[in-house]
Length: 296
Image (tube, rainbow, N blue to C red; front, side, top):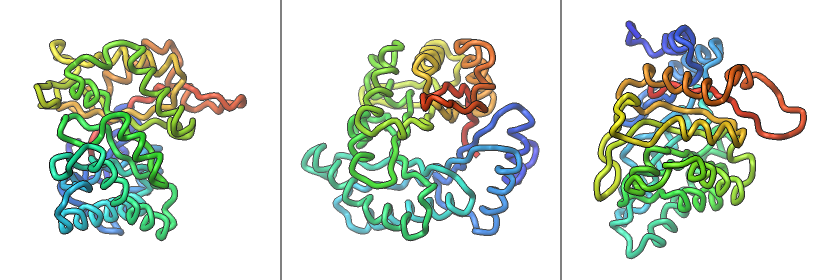
């Protein structure tokens, strides 16, 4: 955008052919109720689906009680801001293993410390705002696919956020290399949590560089030396008929979001974008094919 005014973002996105935005609160939730509601009104006016990424400074598996309480508070602030603006999911990274005796202990701590967050969400009457633990990219972080599903199975109002690049990086480039890999993730989510968890499936995507510990740096779709392959991901999701919302995490956010949208339209066949407007009378999932823009 030429303007730095966040209220102009929904109109801008619609003008270039995108239809979703993840509001970036990764350095802190610093938006007033008045501005959040105004932003939400603009998003509704231009039919832009909103999500919100909570601050990076969250560690629900810390042994330090102050760290845990601060993390809980940041998630509560994120839920409140999402409620004001009409964002449907709060995306966050759950925590780290290092402070706990085992991975299992770290996972249990995350689940336990999310309970007051879920209670706060319910106290607001904000059941339209989902708590969205994201699959994480570093092997030091709580949040592989199974852990993310387990969190969502144990915390009311939680649904998984799938970052395909993170899964790929965490595996050392050995997973999310075929359509079967992508299908296995979605089917595992649906088997454990139910079909509602993929209606819609909130997703992040970019190419990614990884090392021994997993994620290092996000890259553009044009950098062929990095993976995963977006065409594989979108083709698998289209084959499954998943309702999907993609958030671009590329260094060139909206530019690559448009590339992603074009790829999905190509691999999904003509008219896939229009399917997003359709209603299924048979109760089956429909491929939305609506590639979404990245951070606000």
